[in-house]
Length: 353
Image (cartoon, rainbow, N blue to C red; front, side, top):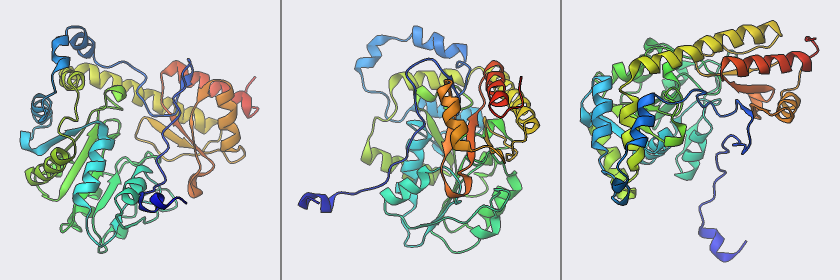
């Protein structure tokens, strides 16, 4: 080791899903298979290019106001960032500064552990039960903060509002963050609880249900004091986080509720069809309420199936975690894409023609 390396912060980074540069059936990164709302394209085409020479509004005021109106909260209850990853990273930096460990599940979004280690935050990971569900009683103990995804990833399991509220009620002396990247495919959002609990922060994203992963828009909703602390940290780090085009397109996406609901329903319908098709092939999986399915076959190696699918230009995600090492996470694509996936698997395991 060179002398200067002793003072370098070293972490094991998050590994994102592969982004192939050729046409494939891409079911590995939970992107939406349908385009954004038509108004987004129109906004891009009509955008005044003169605006690109100027810095964007550091407050992201128009986007913040539109999000606040959409969710029925005040402007000062909304924080925006460059995708929910940026928002969550800022939350870790701002709120998790206790000597006590923060808590998050052992099977969840793997970036949580990366941020904890990057910012040198102590953490503990209570185990999901045998059905991959969060055990809420594990979060009653003393801690320095809590974060959990609902629906959880990569399990896809959604817990109802009463379950979420129970965890918040037992932890009112620390910040509780609910990561709702997939909530639009599931059920009620914990945003309903933010006016009741001043320590609750709910984080969502445009990357999944709104088909705008490439625009990088995420946001948090909570008590105005928490939002102030987030903005104070953000302005001390990078004032101009949101670019001009994302700000404009983020507003337009929220205006077409009918299109949004139609696309979400298409994905939900295809997800339920895919569940039935996988079950008929003896796959086992938690009851996903997201736009992906975490599936395992009792007689088929997940790693070998992953490689075979990839060879056929069908990309899914192989997860090598100890408790899920024989599982594949399969994004829900179009109906046609999922039919092609199922046909390949049928042939691969010998149940097809």
